[in-house]
Image (cartoon, rainbow, N blue to C red):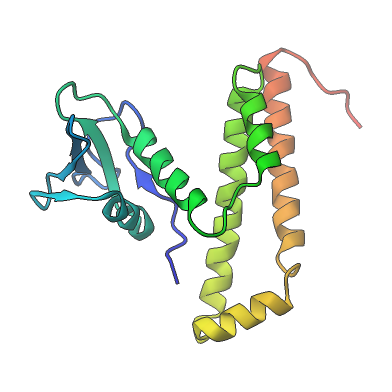
Length: 181
């Protein structure tokens, strides 16, 4: 079963060190579109970068010439490949709705909201995985298929709470106070 840890690509504009004081893996992207892993001193593929994400390893992708941070672009490229091969995660309607938020005043809040909700979902998935350690992958799939809404009420409650917190932050940013009640 894949790790449910959030990918730990280094934040944009950050220096290559992680929170634990160790080094973040640096991958250099050359003009010929090849990726060079400075830790293993070898060329790697997008599949290898995907494996780093799946293992929760910290990394940053930098342009070999300019040093520009290309991590987001590489992660988006991996998502594009995953979306075009097999069963896509995003529907056309969801993608269209996401596009509508670019340039919108709520763009920053939408990104934060999606990130928080994905983390809540991943935390719930991790809790369920810990509770079902003795399950084989087959039993896990059967159980999930028979209980599709079991974790949803908890997820929706946490999602509502995250949205309410964001609304409060937004109102506070504009100096608006909610009336008590």
